[in-house]
Length: 95
Image (cartoon, rainbow, N blue to C red; front, side, top):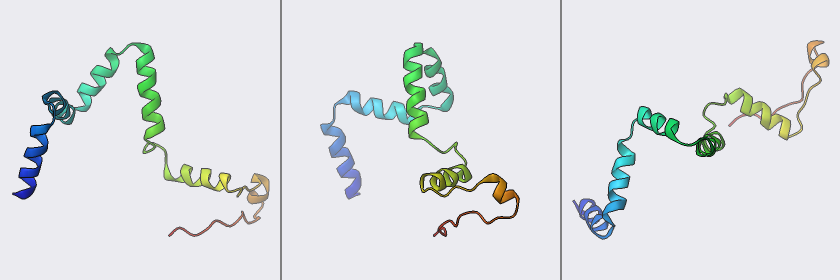
């Protein structure tokens, strides 16, 4: 009950436009977002796409992320050596 009063108090001090915007965004479906994205001019679509790619890496497989971390740490293996049964560089154990 106390939390509800705090929320009501915060809403009473916030401009109505901000409250409506927050409610509207919370109710948007993926189809609505896609429809609005398609209606943007090309330059704005490019900005949105760039933001999504840079902000969300959920589409990148974990194995690729581990491989990139290995490469950044200098843990490379010569493919011919590995194919001829040489051991690759060691990798720290996952926690």
